[in-house]
Figure 1: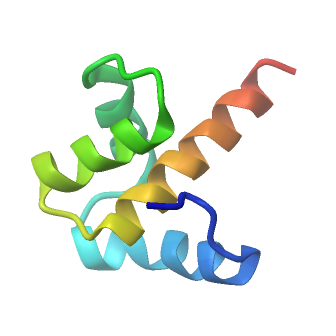
Figure 2 (figure 1 turned 90 degrees about the horizontal axis):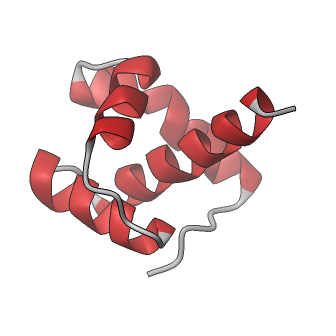
Length: 75
């Protein structure tokens, strides 16, 4: 499973997550941060999809966005 969507697809997925899941991005980021400590993004997205009943597309977009936001916090 690839975590890389086109920038346009990624933006659309991220914008729809609150509508589809009823949870906003900071809540999902907290869930990811408090979840199991996986080394690989693919493992995190699979866990997120399985544990929280998300499609793998939404889970992968959430993990990718979380990684992007985390990198920005460190600069």
